[in-house]
Length: 315
Image 1 (tube, rainbow, N blue to C red):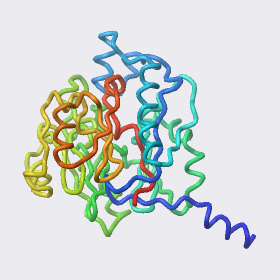
Image 2 (image 1 turned 90 degrees about the horizontal axis):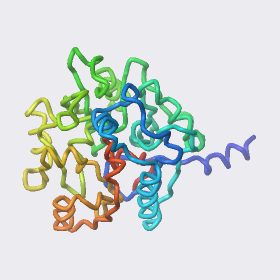
Image 3 (image 1 turned 30 degrees about the vertical axis):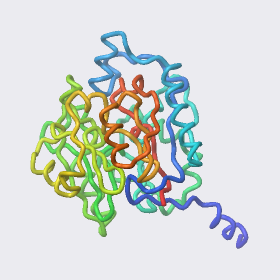
C-alpha cells in the first residue's frame, strides 16, 4: 500500500493555470470526429448555428476534422501534451472549454446544459489522472461554462448574465450563483463579473461567453469588443486594467467571426484563424508569433480556438 501511494504521488497530473498566456504544457483539444451532422433547429444552442442550419451552410464533419487536426499539429510543433476526448458516436465534442476549467491546481467541472453532460465523461481518462481532492463540482444551482472563466493573476474574470429573464436565454450560460461560488472557492482571488449582451436570434448581438468579446494576449495586451458588454463601466474597467494603448478593439463583424477567441501557447505565440488579417497583423506588430490555421467552418457554431481547448498545465 505504501509503494502504491508513493507511485501515485508521481503519476498524478499536477495542474497549474493562473492566466491565459503562460507557456502551455498540457491541454485537452476537442474532436470533430463522428460529429453527428447538422442538428435540428430545436437542438441548436446558439444563434450562429441556427443561422447556418437555416441557410444550409452548417459545417461538414470532414472540414471540421481537418481544421482541428491543423491545431493539433501546431500544438505538437511546440511540444504541448495533447489529450483528446474519447469519441462518442454522432455527438458534438468540439468545445471542451465549456465542460470544465482549471484555476490554480483545481479542476472545476462545469454545470453545463443537460444535453451536453456526456462530454465530461468522454475525458474521464484525463480526470482519472487528477488528484480527486483537486476535482471540484459546483452546486447544482451554479450554472457555468469555461468560456466565461478567465484566470488573470490575482483576478478571476467571469462573464455572466444578471437579468431576471436569464432562463429565457439559451445563450446565458453562467449565472450569479456561479460567480458567488467561485469567490467562495478561491477566497484569495478577486472574482470580477461582466454582464454580457445576450440574444437567442442574432449572433451579432450575442456574446455567448466572455471569450467571445474579450481575451488577454501577450504580456500585457488584450482583444476586446465593447458591444459585448451591457455595462459600459465594466468594459472601461477592462480597458483601464490593460491600458488603452495595449487594447485591440474589434468590430461587430470581427466579433461575429470570433476574433477574440484565438488561443495562446505562450506570451510570444498564439494560434489564430488565417482570415483574421487585421488582428494577426497587429499581433505580429506586438512581437507575437502567429500560427495561422483554417478554422472558419468550426466558427459557424459560435466557437473558435479558445472554445476548443481546455488547458491543464501552464508554466
